[in-house]
Image 1: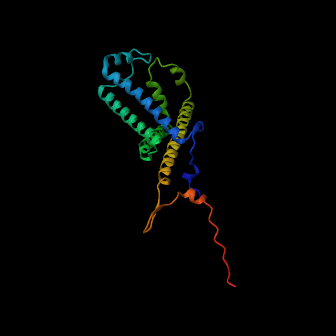
Image 2 (image 1 turned 90 degrees about the vertical axis):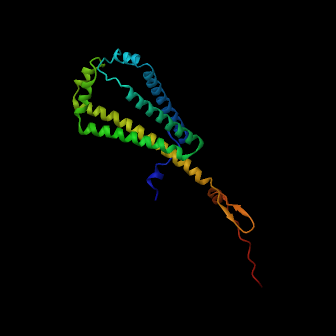
Image 3 (image 1 turned 30 degrees about the horizontal axis):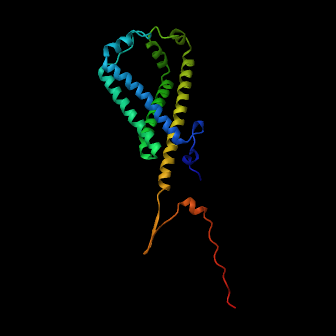
Length: 225
């Protein structure tokens, strides 16, 4: 009987590329995003007065709560940690070290769980969508038109959007998991097994090669007259 893990196992992902290639691309993409966020946070720490001026004079209005220096330092540390985790996943997929991929996989599970909790909170408390819209500044585009929409339609649209995000994140989790299984599987098949005798030590061939070798025919047996 095939287990569910083996049933969903595949070495290819989107665009018909290998799961290792997909994991490397995903890790580099996450690193670029967190690098941009890190640059914005570092510029905010370097010149906080100019940072607050740009926020308060933007089109979103003056109702946005500006982060203080402590929150910016925490966000900077999180961005650095994310860059480290994504770099480990990229290096682990490239050099085929399965243990380096585990932190990135755990982050994906944590992020998926947070988005699932957001979807559950929208279902349990549908009025939170209207409350969130009321907190938006008055200059937000199409705010009045969105608030005039039926609450059930808004909840359905939000759940549909979150559902698409969760489906995409689940697919990426599956790609990283398949990459981990592929890398860990190659690590186990490359281990040589040795048979030690009194005279010599002979390495056994891998399992695939041993199965592919046809068995030798036994020598003919002669009956005594």
